[in-house]
Length: 375
Image (cartoon, rainbow, N blue to C red; front, side, top):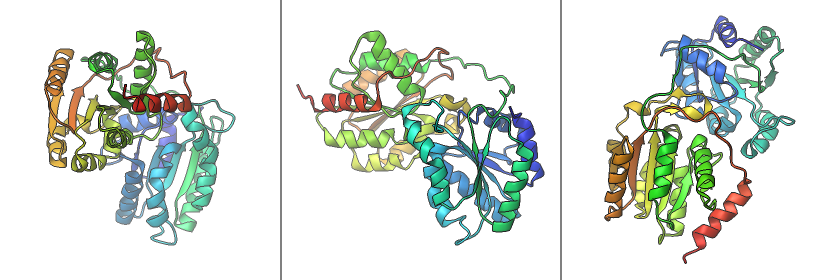
């Protein structure tokens, strides 16, 4: 296996002075090492992967040195526009190195939402005419990097490295202990208890959906929630579409801070449409917890100012169960949507947290049946 700090030092020897991206579980040791060993001017954790491509492009324009953009392969879609219309050699010819976690690699077991993405990732890069090299635990990474950077200098264009599962050694950096405060799972359990039986729940990517599924299992309730297992950042737009499609039912979006930041532009659209039946619950632990706990900027953000400027009619922030119950009663007393309930939660989840045992198709069917059942 490859030591992340040695790999990062090899990149710096190639002239890299900026690392930017969105965390990935396959790249967790690499991301953790960047977080611990790079300065704020060297490493920027961006809202989405397209932002990172643009950031690396700006850095190159100022310095003449290529940047590194890291991402899970599911984030390649967010990169397509700037890769094709900004950095491409037929446009501005800006070299940068994409380091991509290869979730769903053919022959490697993974979750359903990663299977097709893993299968088509090499072809996506080929379609973009971006050369790529595969990095594995036994790879001679120095030779690969020499080849990649020679390519970029010659072509003045992006290149990519696809990183296989298990490539990097575990990284023991600064301790990140679970933080004190309300656990997300406890907040979700309380929300499920407080919600009306007719409410429709849409939950975001990662541990939020996994915990919601297990809560339903523990309570012996049918699984009729929409679990957004992929499409990070789009749960609120899915919830908006559901709210417009069934205005007689309240729709509750269970969102995360990293996901909300990824496509923050959804908020002014929700505020402009003003669905009275949409409750946007933001579970904010200021971390990308599902892929390693890397910090987001959400801990210092004033979401009340943001959502009110976007046109939301109601906002409340809570940080414990008692506050959650009080805010919920206020909503029940007639606060019209769109409303945001921000719940400040702790970092941390159970180590034995399972995954949904239903297929996406089964969950879709159950949700659609629930959404169309008006009693």
